[in-house]
Image 1 (cartoon, rainbow, N blue to C red):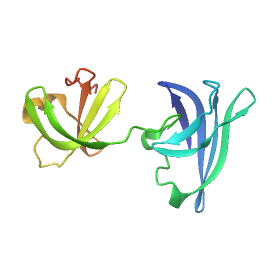
Image 2: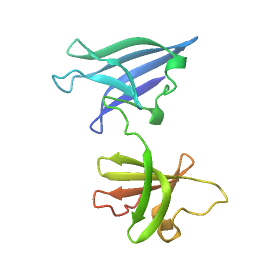
Image 3: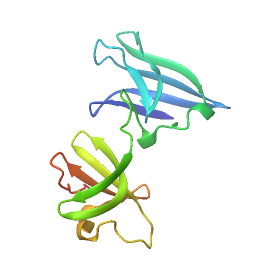
Image 4: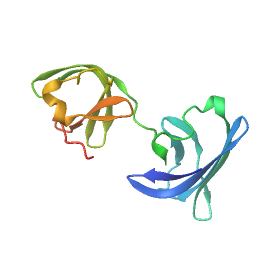
Length: 153
């Protein structure tokens, strides 16, 4: 399985992930993006330090499956920074009270997430048209100004 390595929204390399019994074999090659030490992540799991090699960066590692439930990578990509964690959230969006959910900070603002059920109502019916349904959750993007953003479909 071959996956991109993303940094600042751009693909800077590729990682190969191979299943070998109870282990994952990770082989990664990517461009050097700074003179700093760079680490490879799958979601929030730190896989290791990328070492200088042939003008770029590389990592070869064997990882037990039991210690790496984040593999294969969520969203189908590896990164040089850990994914933002989901944290509990309760509050208001515009003038509407929104029930307890989860929140993750992103570059453009926040993403709110609420469990989705086929027969359950939208968490905040007045804002229904601004929610998307992804990965079994109602999701609502808020811009840096705290106002809902329209999700691209």
